[in-house]
Figure 1 (cartoon, rainbow, N blue to C red):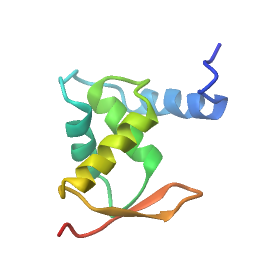
Figure 2: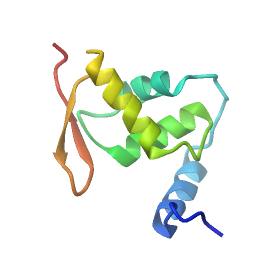
Figure 3: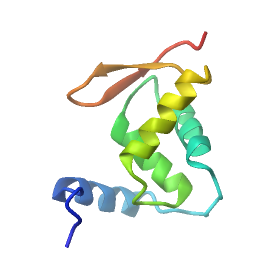
Amino acid sequence: ELPGWLSVNKAEYMIEWFKQNPIVKAKKLTVKTAVLESFEELPNEFSLLSLIAKVRQKTGRPYLTDGTITRRLRELRSEGKINFKVIDNHKSIYKKLEVF
């Protein structure tokens, strides 16, 4: 049985993603480092779900919460290491911007 916060669609997405992208090696990465690496690997426009899936794979933590990942994403932006904007709130599509 799924926890209340985990929808069936989200669970199915996560299971399918991890089947296609198994965790090859467990590197001890901080969430923040994994977010930065994942952000840099993604195209200029990307889905937040893609970023979240990559971070979970890199950290070896499939149930790492979305909120933790997005909080680290915002921290990296406030530190001036990355820059982005949301171009579609409904679909959670982000666009990378130039870092100043």
